[in-house]
Amino acid sequence: MADLEGNLDAHNYGLDTPQVTGAFPIKGASSLDFGMKHRLARIFKEDGKTVMLAFDHGYFQGPTSGLERVDLGIVPLAPHVDALMGTRGIFRSVIPANSDNAVVLRASAGPSILKELSNEGIGVDISDAVRIDAAAIAVQVFVGGEYETQSVLNLTQQIDAGMEVGIPVLGVTAVGKELTRDARYLRLATRMIAELGAQIVKTYYCEEDFETVTASCPVPIIMAGGKKLPAKDALTMAYNAISQGASGVDMGRNIFQRLAPIAMVQAVSGVVHDGLNPQQALEKYLDLSKGAQD
Ligand code: 5RP
Image (cartoon, rainbow, N blue to C red):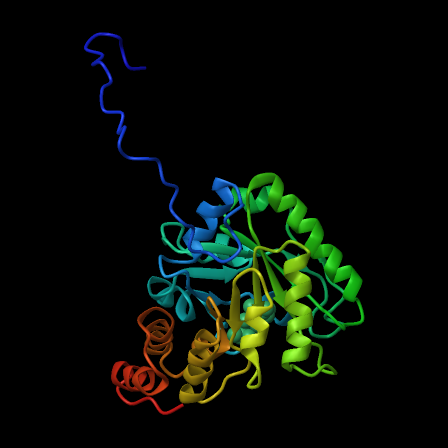
């Protein structure tokens, strides 16, 4: 405790300088508490955008292509992204605790790919999200799915738990095979997730009217990559999503299933944070990968 000796008289009151609380660059977050904002600011950088690497796929589909060895396929990518989205099992067993990435923790769970994927429940107690130092927790929401209401209540339960401890929730749009991934559906799903209180929403891109999806969602939307596409198409999709209002990307397969994942994640980051257009980003990928063709 500071002692009383040498305690200098205060005198610099800045009387001619009113206190200003800077604008918070993350969409819809201005009214949140400091802790929520501080965690969100670990995910979204000063430009209000994020490059998140998703490798949580194993929680329902096991060691999918590119994730056979997370220590080999994901850890080398960590220095090039802002946030890592994964399961607590992988964070604790594989991800170096001294990585400075924001931790986004998969917090819903249930069926494998052998069963009905929408039949999820709560997969992680909020106390373990605190323990693992999560900057956010992720919950799948199956709007239009067989267990739609159950997944919505998973989301709201985790939002309530997150509010208790100041951890934001990332609501993840899961589109059932029988549903059409168009703007009408994505507007419905993303707006529901935001209305229910999620601080971040993840969804897929759609070619038509994606800007209406981002415009009608009052919190940041980040784009999931979906199945692997040719590099140029994946980079174009990311560029279009950012151009139409997305606050970043949360990509997995289009990065870790690439011939040159480290090159790809740097090209994606160039789109999100450096304003590269698709051609410039592709050239970056080809240059860094020494001509990978995939
Ligand atoms: C599946 C997920 C993934 O996090 C999400 O789909 C992003 O991964 P990809 O870019 O491979 O689609 O929610 O667990």
